[in-house]
Structure formats: C-alpha cells, structure tokens
Image (tube, rainbow, N blue to C red):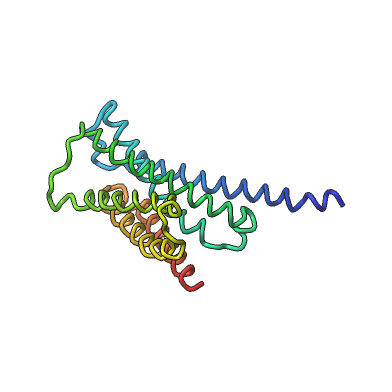
Length: 211
C-alpha cells in the first residue's frame, strides 16, 4: 500500500525533471547558434569586442526562447497543469518575464559595447535594429505593469485585455527582429527552427483564443 501511494509522487517528480531538462536543453541548443552559425558581423571582432558581441547575441537568443515559452506556461495544458500545478505555472510565467526582460536589456548594451557604443546611424537599412529598440521599449512597461498590476490600481480584467493585445504584438515583433537583424537566421537550420517555433506559437494563441 505504501509503495502504491508514493508512486504518483515519484512519477510527478520524474516528469518535472524531464520537463525541466527539455527546457534546459532547448536553451542550451539555442545558445550554440552564434557558434555554429556565425553572423559575418563577428568575423571582424577580436578579444573583448568579440566576446561582448557573441554574449550579446546569446542573450538575444535566450530572450527570444524565453518569450516563446511564455504562452506555454499559461497554455492550460492538462498534463502540464497536473505535473506543476496551475499556480506554479503562472509563477513560472511571471518569473520568466522578469528574466527575459533582464536579458533583453543587457542584449543591446553588449552589442553596442562591442562597437564601443557607437550608435548606428538613422538609415533605412538599420530598420531591424529599430524594430528591436521599439520591442524593448514595449517590453519594459509590459513586464513592469504585469508585476505591479495591483499596486498601479489596474484591475485584472483590464490587465488581461491589454495582455491579450500586446503579447502577440511583442512576439510578432520579436520574430521580425530576429529573422532580419542577424544573418544567422536567414537560412538553414536556425531559420527552419524559428519558423517551427513560430507555427507552434500561432497554434498556442489560436488554441487559447478558442478556449
């Protein structure tokens, strides 16, 4: 009887480990892209500049991956809810938002630092970079409002409506920025993986809207 009662707990613990392992493997695999699919911009960098540029690219990719996980955490999947509980998944969603915002802020600082903080000129060819700046300016208040919703006097219904409108815009801008700002994602495996992630994200939003 004792072994039967502890089996569900052991199974849940194992499934939690598997889910967290998958999450870690996806993050790690994504971080290898700047090494195996180098953008030409890194060819002309050496020493600390090269390190800063590559680290900045890695943080940008981490931000994108964490953004893609956001709709998964609140997707209301029966199996996932059973493994982690709905309360913990919403907490993951909230904490993940703070982590991705931190990496999103550091990402351009390191990229610009690799060029000694010489800001790119206001030319049309830099439109992907401007999309990235706009995305960051949208992401900062979005995450801050989500964290301090009650203190700001924003009721849940209004916040939820804003969340439903702004979240898809953020993800769309992220896809546009990533596919155009770095040549690492122009073709090959990174491009197809990004397209696959995009299709999954669309499915999650459609599923959420229909439910």
